[in-house]
Image (tube, rainbow, N blue to C red; front, side):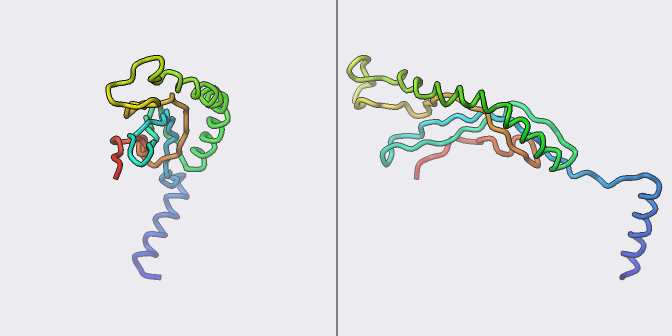
Length: 141
């Protein structure tokens, strides 16, 4: 063991003996809304998930954050069931060529770019709050 490591270990032992604890490895429990959005008509239509941070909490450790995430996930299951039950009715709000004129030149079943069928809640453990948020609308390539 090098002299430098021996000296470091000595001071760490000294600090621990005086009640100093290790620096925690904090994590954040982040609550997001997740909306399924229509990206555009290319290749038969494509969709993307839009994540928006709504709340977060700092936890002292990743283990504490995981425990809180599990608890929160169980509690929001009911809200997400409501989302799943109601999202199909959202499609009824889309233009139908037979009942409501679609924008000029668009066929029946037209979906406006950016249209969403609603939101559900999701919880993540992150090193920094908001790191899972959608930063920009994706482009089809």
